[in-house]
Image 1: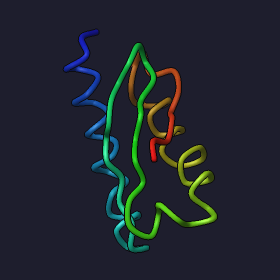
Image 2 (image 1 turned 45 degrees about the vertical axis):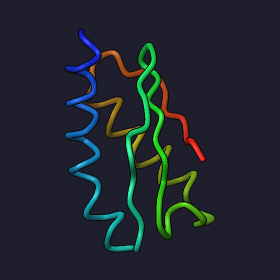
Image 3 (image 1 turned 90 degrees about the vertical axis):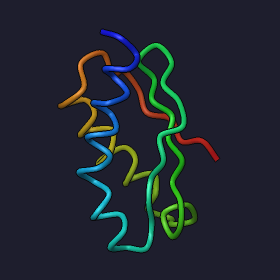
Image 4 (image 1 turned 30 degrees about the vertical axis):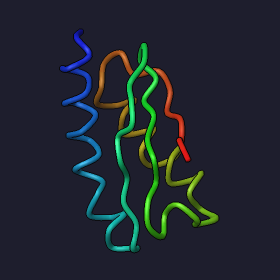
Length: 78
């Protein structure tokens, strides 16, 4: 799979999750993809929320594992 294909699939998943983040005053930005590792930045209220780790792992990472072939790990970039 090409990086462009993976990037568009990751962006599609983030776009599906974005309304839930926006509802709570936050957002997510795709920063980079390296060898299956997706790096994102949580913004707005999500950036400083104590539940941001749960949002990353239980929400975003789970969705990426289900929908993006070749995805291996999610990392938060500050």
